Length: 235
Image (cartoon, rainbow, N blue to C red; front, side):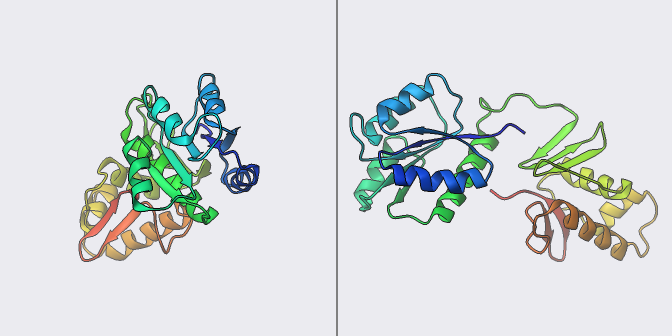
């Protein structure tokens, strides 16, 4: 998976250094600019996935820079500003920003907003996403390669048994559709259901333990109580 690049634009070096720490820890590649003109110059030569940009800056402020960027580019832009009135936020969003965060801010909350914006952008912007390998079923950081019979979660290869892989592939090929325990059993085991409910549930639990960062709060395989299971990542 391609390393995602974030452009930080702020004339306060302390803010840049703070964000550098938190975002580097999340594995992002960072570029830095200290006013709007530097940001525009950077975008001429760099492929950027998301911009975090202050509003009040010398030479070219964040609002003007945002408008110029929107003339050609569609990556998410998160505006930062000490001006936190509703009108300030409305102005920022109306000229093309995707999110508006007031200063001072919680760095962990900002990281969460970055992840959310990148998820939306890569999911819905078909222009950004090139055609993928037809044998791969991709759901955010979960990749199911049906040709190689491999699974990767958060770039780590996951070892699944043949039954576990078959269940995950079945759910992936029916993304968003709830499959009952009986449907899963009949498709994967290819034999009469009888008393196969516990067998399916045990396999689902084992898959979650392997692909989820927190199996108690799954990102991918969702339980629809009284109905069954579906594979449907968070929005």
